[in-house]
Length: 234
Ligand code: HEM
Image (cartoon, rainbow, N blue to C red; front, side):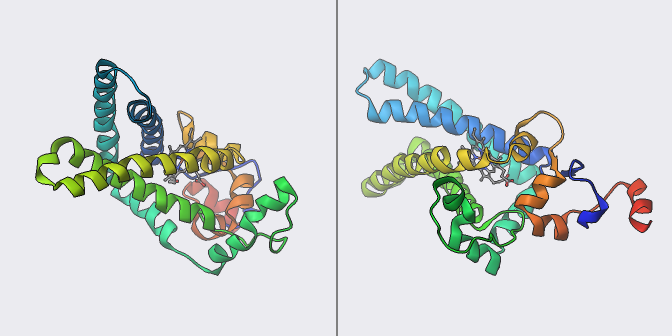
């Protein structure tokens, strides 16, 4: 969409209901699974307490898995749009890493790379890398969890052991990334946070879209309100 055709306070659709439901249920169950799993693995609790926590962990795992399956089966087109945008790397995505989006300069006065941040599409280079990692973790933690739970007798002892370590440590490492990088960086754009998390429409302001994702805004955002077409021609 052409920037001159709208005001900075106008709103554009960024998150469809399926994206919002998937992300919200995923984030809530992720942290609940993290807490129940970490308590069982890292603390020296009584067997009874551990058993109770595992029942919660497995119940939450069912919701976590159903959320993934529902997203893939009921909104495959939304998952495809997200994946297309995450897998599409151009020179701007790569050059984002030269100054890490300008954040080290802005927050810590570290003069890393060029001053200008190259214009980004729907996701910047750092988001592309981390969201691909998050999706990989979401899928593989669900798969390994189910194997450890219901198919343990079918896998060898060694495979079971390595799957268990993967399940624990991939979950822990990705959680550190989510807490220390994903959430603080997401909070830098309140328009994106509220667009994704609030009940209701998944729109963000034109100002936020233009500032963070100018290529996405110009290339992919389209007007669908027929009343607007007159304005565009005028
Ligand atoms: C309270 C916690 C969280 C907040 C505030 C949050 C916030 C956000 C925001 C604002 C976006 C949109 C970024 C954009 O469109 O440019 C996003 C996307 C994403 N988040 Fe989170 N997030 C949280 C927890 C998590 C967790 C636990 C995971 C899973 C490991 C996760 C995985 C993702 C993924 C894969 C995306 C990209 C997919 C999409 O745009 O729908 N998030 N998050």
